[in-house]
Picture 1 (cartoon, helix red, strand yellow):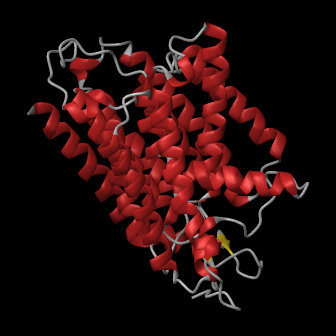
Picture 2: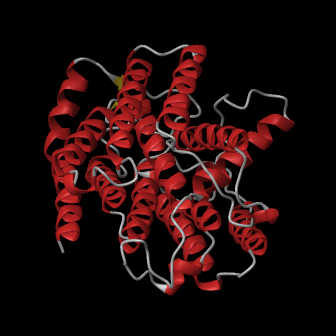
Length: 369
């Protein structure tokens, strides 16, 4: 009961901080002209919109998580160490993102920041993937394999979340879905500190959606997307590393539901992250085929395709929310016993649903309203 109370308080605190503070930030951003101007063919907004929403998201997360962090869990699983390293990671990414939102940041400097963050997360905090749970016959990883895979996963997830921040309410809404699912997993597993982190993130993004949903009054910018992507990466790795059960119970004697206990954890994580991952894979593949830089912005994202079919911003983001949720529920319901089969099923469902908009003939003009 105490854990449930803390989770609710963390969620509602971060939600209210963002809800109450964002209007003032919007006013300040407009006064200081910290806005994204329309005019680029790639941009889908037709007016000036503040781009520093990540300031409020970051502040709400750090404040709420620090305020409600459960003291009784500090001695478990080196949680205090993980907490201090997490804050260090978020502060670094936040300042890199703010600088990029306001005056821009050179790609090499951003790469350097990611290398430092990856080192802190994987080496110092020891937040890394340790087991593949039977996918392609792989289980426990060698230490060097664990380091390389974890660094790769961090880079992919952070950039994937950054790339989907291209339409009103999309990144924020997908972030709510992802953090909500992770929060439920940790809640059922009895991991209160990580459940709190997930629900604090969920509350902050839900509050931000009030102002970011179409028509958006503010964007989260890199200061938001980098911070959110890093937290999601930490949560994803910790789900994959959930401890083994003994007779269906955790080490703290909590009974885990059968649907969660039996599902393959890497497959579950990939299904929860399905939209950012599938959109990134598709966009990077197209750019590679064209011989363009994988980081060169274009209009090849799935949300661009849906808008070209005549969907409004609202219908587009709701469609993509539903897509993400359907893939997760499909994996949980089907739940193949063989890990590799589960991965194949998840990828098949994700790509099949993703292909549907590309089988429909688009309208002659984009709907940019």
